[in-house]
Length: 253
Length: 165
Image 1: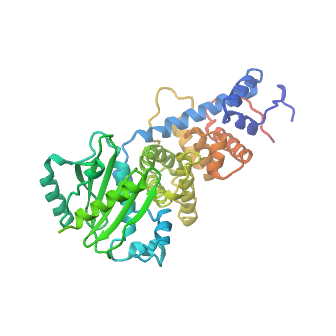
Image 2: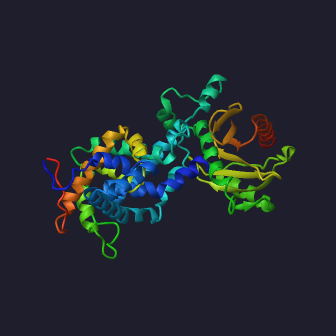
Image 3: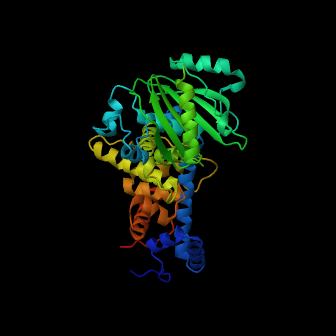
């Protein structure tokens, strides 16, 4: 092949390496294009292609996101993460994992594993919320307790966590696996937040188990008709003390 | 930003990418939903290395390929689809034509081109998402752009560029 212009030293492949490389690579490409008409023509064509693709598809990102996609993030589907190894190691696995996660999900009672995961997911969503962390404020505590107890179908209480400086600021109702779940939120003077996730459970009673994800830890347990998880980003000992306090308050007659 | 918030923030971009890839609104949102579900299930595998966006794109593309394999007989790709945006002003390339041409590109080329052109990923990022060497990806992009150019060049005075043959 004998092109009438000086043979381009830069193949399409190499031009792509530079075009989608770092700033230095892109600058090098621009410099080469100044003395290589053929290359400049190719680059202009690719720019037009990119512009067309952006014009065609980028606007999709501005469309309202269908609720079903947001709903995925609120579903307690996350399976045991690293925490279950901890739980297994200390003998807390009262709920069979025999058939793996799929089987666990198909099993009758609400798997306790979802309690920790759902609790941490709701903590992630609501504890950072500035404007609307709660639906009903603690100033209306009697109503809050009555409403959440009614929706959960089991009596709940609001544990007192002032021992570590956390006061109740309110709560909200959440979608749950088989029945709604409740989220109580606490805050201390430093603005640190804790959430207590409560859901109806017909699982077997369990001991206190620890679970964690980046940025949040949970102590969870099942007692009677309630599955509970206290979630926060606190030293583990502090969180454990608080979980035990909550446990006592919730189970006291 | 908490993990779930970061995932949530990535949804609009994933939708755009999936729409461009699948060219069908419902199918694209199904793919995104599938991707999100897998991402939550594998949340513990996320180590904060690289961008979350790249990790999600990798999941999405794996699900996309799985879908292609499953639907070999009845491809989920629809070649006839309307552009998502009406042409504005005087585009250099007719958008409808580009959209149609994208539909005729092989899926691997379309997926690769969209990562850099729509997602704005670097060659290195896109190569890691696709599990390819950078050189392989660069030639795939070059092929994709050449095909696209041929398919959209009909009405335009195309500069006489030498073919490589």
